[in-house]
Length: 563
Image (cartoon, rainbow, N blue to C red):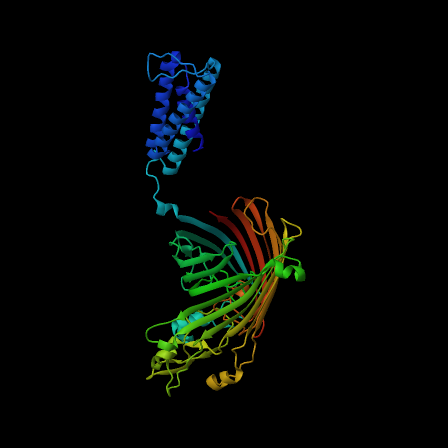
């Protein structure tokens, strides 16, 4: 459009220069109008002053050239003139002049109006309290879930069969915990729960982002954002669930080849939608980064005949429990994962990863004093007490209840008996032949290679049988995401998590009501009611692997929305 304006203006000026003398007054008006329009274009910033000046000079030069040409065509005859500035040319029909004038005026009007509207929209003319730039870079989102949960305990379960180790540690001993020292294994329960999560995403600059997510839930629990309703209308607990800075780098082919995140971050590991090692609600405190490399499709075409795979490598460092008094004995977690993400030409996809997770200084440090009551604990012994436990891991007594002057015989504080160094393999295959319906088959296997039976016996005098394997198979059928009316999906899983395969504090909080030493199956489904509103339900049936009978079935019915 910028090229059209100079041409139109030149045409007007040329028309004014080649007109007959009898029409001089009319065309001078047109020439002045054109000049005024050019000045307005300069004033509005559509043209620069230099561009306008060049246009006028060019138009005048063209007019002189056309006048000379007209004179040559008339045979060089002199033209009488009362005015030295007057130029006479051959006759131009009225209908041609009218057509030129109408076309020029219409096109100039449309172009100028279009430019003004575009600039007004861009600069937000006339919009009161137009938002500043920093507000435009912030996005708010969230989700809300209301859940009805039924817990049905097996008829063969016996009361007082299993200790509630979290309650024992919180109260300082078995006797101090009273009846809370034992898990409920016999009384069915119905609970109404709610989960609210609000997320703030900020675009800082090219490649840099920040995220803050607030969530309901038990502040003590790292694996649940559920809030039980029925507290005499007390306010919901609300806390910072995530807060991190993230950087993404892209190459010339738009591959996200590098990602870094630091703070309280989302799970950086590929899990194939499994919760064997990590609960889905778990956030990680620390730093993690991922590098990705996509192989050339040409180099693999002859061998595989498909699209090229992307290989990724993720590493992370996470403090678990630190303080100025612990020093080098602080609890840390280090992890690394190598994987492949391969999308095929028929839209099928394969993703797999192998990870190694190494926990540092998480084993119990026993009080070996002659009177080993908890009031005589060293700093190391007190700090070795886990901050959070669910169910299943092998534990040992760090100290006994009572005081140095009045010692007791019952166990006081408890800690982990074994070390945890976990190898974890995940794989997922997405079959898209029936799109939009997808079929996903996935598997997860974990093994704790840090378990040392002899070392545990030497440290605790407990001979604990090795149970260090965990695995899951899962089948999903349906829409990949449930965000519209009529979208649906169903799934089924079978899972077995032995006692010391993974940390019970961080695994699935719903399967067997949380923890390890459990096996069982799950079925469930989702159905979209309308855009961004859906219902879901699942049935979990589980049993304990070793120990007294402890069966529990759980039914969860959810109403969900995203906004």
